[in-house]
Image (cartoon, rainbow, N blue to C red; front, side, top):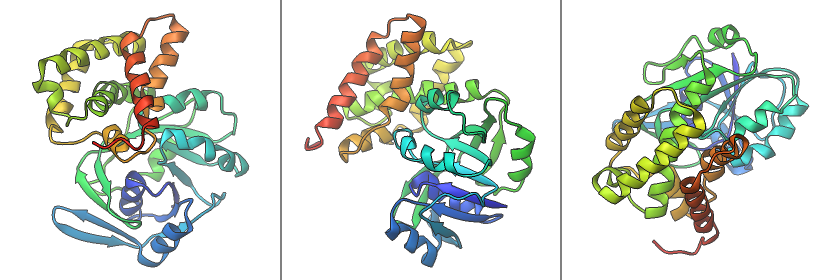
Length: 298
């Protein structure tokens, strides 16, 4: 099968490596330097102190020759990708983004493609233009969106590596909100407070504020089992206690964060439902202020 990976970041390179073991994979990147490097060197994966390599193609344009396109760019970069996707023939497209800001866009999108959405639960750090470190084993979980046929993608993704399982979920909303609630509780707070994930559990004031954010997000998302969701937030926080969240890293390195994808979606849903979201509004405003202050030294 021919698979195109749109985006050459950590998730894109991780997907490209593992999928290329069973499929013909091309990484579509916006920079000529990265495309040339991948074309000549392939993808290198670091895991458990070992280095692995896989052949992989690269390009700078999206075309109609792929059986599946996996979109791994961040949510705020999607607007630059949509026009190219609208110009190609109908195909299967899997969107792997943090947060749910892109869901509002996809609901109004009339490009005619078979759309799927999913999450990446792996830990990955890009080391160079062609190399990625697999820092935490997880899974790719996906679901059909807006009437797409899951059987089609199940057949396409039937072969996968044991360290890179790909799992189908029947309910896309439950799948995405399950991860969103975790991201909403951990990422903005760690970015604002400039702390590792674990400190949200060990500092009482941080834990109390995280619980307020959690309760607010639960009301907006209408989660069925709040106790189970809260335990998952605490569990992820504990399992990643020594990690810096991606939002904290983005703030430190002066990049645009995924605040719109994570908190922005919740705030828009709150407005649509007529709900107050004072804690989320505070977090959103604070993170956007930090984004503008790119010269701040931590």
